[in-house]
Length: 276
Image (cartoon, rainbow, N blue to C red; front, side):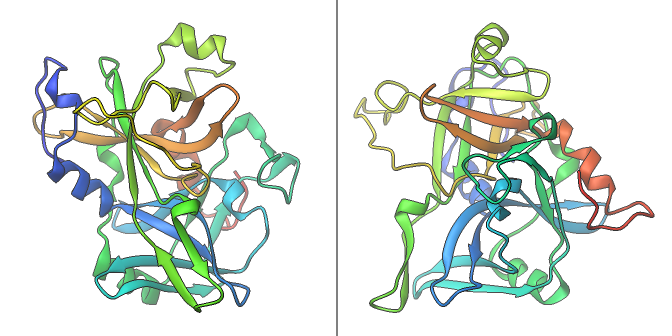
């Protein structure tokens, strides 16, 4: 990732190069069990110990679909690829199972990890690149970061035209709440990064023009990227977005450090389908 300035000023505003790099790690997740494919979430394509995975939110899979697809956008439109039976490590909901809106997970660790098969990996490599998970970082000096994902409202399948109408991957710069504010919102700051998401005041173009944000459904599982203030590392993955808390106008991100434990299931002697 492109480095920034350690004084924490202009470096917290990503350059176009940084946005392009983040985009290459950000994959839309498609449920195409049915005749009408549905974009259900976003994932981050990562590499660890010469194996590659897609990390996302567990509630993305609450509907129980089997045929997991991914997609890419080019000048000819949107294309979907994927397969059935991919190994998916997913947290089991303690309550609200089967309903993505009400599911509650152990320790709130709403995480799922997908290991693509060789054919799917080949297709992923043609359009994306995996992020070295060992480069994850979160510098406490950071005041804001970028959430990247594919919002459902802007990316749909048109059943009448029998075609995908996918427009874009969104990169949204979000202010980071401090520890006191996070605790007041009911978030454990040791596990989560709390982001302010007040659409009326938090988001604006450099010109001062206010942005109209879409419903953020579909961005669950996307990455939260922060400048590490390390000239070697630059911008790094800080965590995974798992909740859009509209009443509180906040987003909840699981810190990347809490993703290591479920990832170890793929490298141990146990079944890769074990639950978090």
